[in-house]
Length: 250
Image 1 (spheres, rainbow, N blue to C red):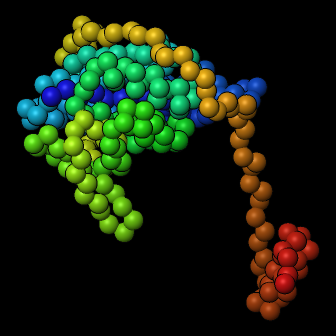
Image 2 (tube, one colour; image 1 turned 60 degrees about the vertical axis):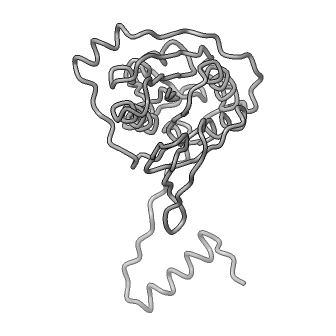
Image 3 (spheres, one colour; image 1 turned 180 degrees about the vertical axis):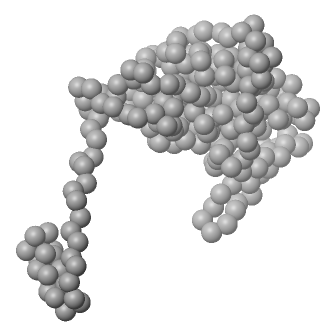
């Protein structure tokens, strides 16, 4: 059984985001593997350790910088990687099309991914991949069991949990609570340098979305504090609401 894991390189979640000319500046920003995808990588490696999978392949769509995310996954224990070359500004549709083409060529039994990326929060790519490939998709899983050519997935649901059984191949995207990703060992880091990583060109498609400009929300203004006796404070609060913030009274 072959497991393929989609990974994305994102900004460090603790990085301070700065804008320059309406765009996000990456100057001095540390880039990491998307934490949600890291959980999916760990899940794939655990399937191999259990003897369920024979190979774990990681694939990332992006620029040459995305190689760092692939090498991190390889250092954790994945077997080989694929870098699908795409421009940095590619939208979710373009990434999904490019990844789906690479996945089709690999013909894996299971496609894993984090259910969302920490940078854009769009949560679109795994679902789009499943749609393009015509495969079933189970989202936000917290547990996965494989047997008899089927995947039994436990997922988050409103007010409880949901258990879904799907035939393989399938796209399965995980929640961070699925597992605790391992830290790459020094031996794993050294071995990752020798593991093969293929470079392929991403399929040429037009973007569905174009980001024109980024902007930060306006800074919050200082609050108003009324320190009076209740009967006086009530009058002052009502006056502030009506005449300052212009609360509509019906």
